[in-house]
Image 1 (cartoon, rainbow over the protein chains, first blue to last red):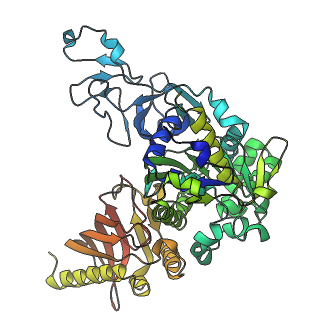
Image 2 (tube, rainbow over the protein chains, first blue to last red):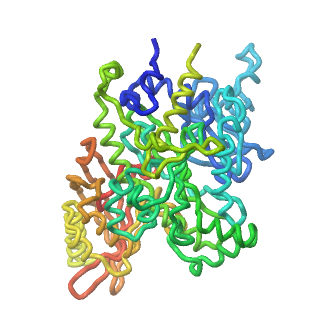
Image 3 (cartoon, rainbow over the protein chains, first blue to last red):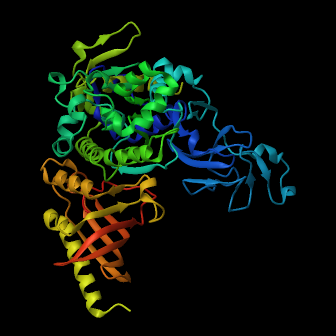
Length: 425
Length: 162
């Protein structure tokens, strides 16, 4: 008897046992991370043929590699002979992958190159290649993977809104291309992975969890995210399919507020952007800035930061981030992005370190709840805030006040859909 | 060859700096800093130009002042309460000396209790490079660069003074 997900994920509340339950975690790794689309890497990380990075997708370690013909392949980081990991560093460059155990060697496409002493096999050794991802699609450099290949086209998963969010990010670069090759930093947190899609897109907590940041520095979050319904006109949006956004655009009080600067300081960037998209569009984009959005299930488009949510176990995860870098700007501009990223995100940052402690406190709080308590009304997490005042536009986008839990409900709605749809028959 | 006086002076500085950091004596710690102080914890080794890298921590004097102000707000969740912690500093070496600066290397192990959430004991082994500068009332710290053994694996919250 498996978990009855509809019983535990209701429209206005979620049962907290799903944040620490071993069986739920195992279900999620299969139904979400193997049988669905997940973000894996960015093409700028593997510019040349033979460049590779390793990633953990759910429970599986994979190698994301640029092939000789320029294609991106995603291979199991696991020798097809006896299971030895082929790569143990985060990134590298090689013309093939050789196992250190018995020297089986594989091409960049995962196919067998050579097996020592092949006369010991009476099967066709060409069939002994690495496991490869069932489906890979890339959009503006963002590489998405569906490990088992059963999830249909990426467009079914991203929907128009998912593509549009990536467009809004990439279009801010003067070349239209972003570079994510500065390396990823791992923030290890003792919490369930699902607390991060929620935290990264929760507009209600900012004035409380981040009060020390607000008290210490002049931050645009004072205008766009603090003070809730009384002050901010920002919106919490649910685009469907689990893709959600805190839309700060209505609240910015000046252009380039999202960059913490003014036009004179970054004139070269503004001119380069205008040269590509025209003055009217550039002026608007410089006000609007990049999206603050979460793409189900593991990609955070966090303004100038990109983060991957990486589950390690029911109560252990990594929030792995890198800094957005633009092409077609001077080094000083990209250094500004690096410094802003360091201030905002990661173990030693001024902002998400306080989110991490909050996630760990939630994990402490809910650690002892049990599924069977649900019926008796114990152990529930309330996510009803603003449900009565949500509006739905003609595209079907649900909108609430920034402080409403529209985004959180959007994540869990999609969670429930896939946990039910992809349940074993 | 480093004189015994210089060596003693350097060790006294390093131990004091460690104690002030462990005990969240934030004002006294900040007084150790020069106006051009640079504080760096890279995501990997102490290599390359910090300006070009994404690091855990890369503070100029202004940003470290902000870091200390944030800790002093009384609202910094990640340090409410402040972590009980103690570090042992050892293998202190004077790597170089000029008229006004001393380059110092040391190893350390820091034990921290995550008193804010899980009460996990967190162990932080690493290597530290100091650039110390002479001023009228003794030594000041112009740079503190910290290479963590665990840097590439990823870190728990690092919201104290490492």
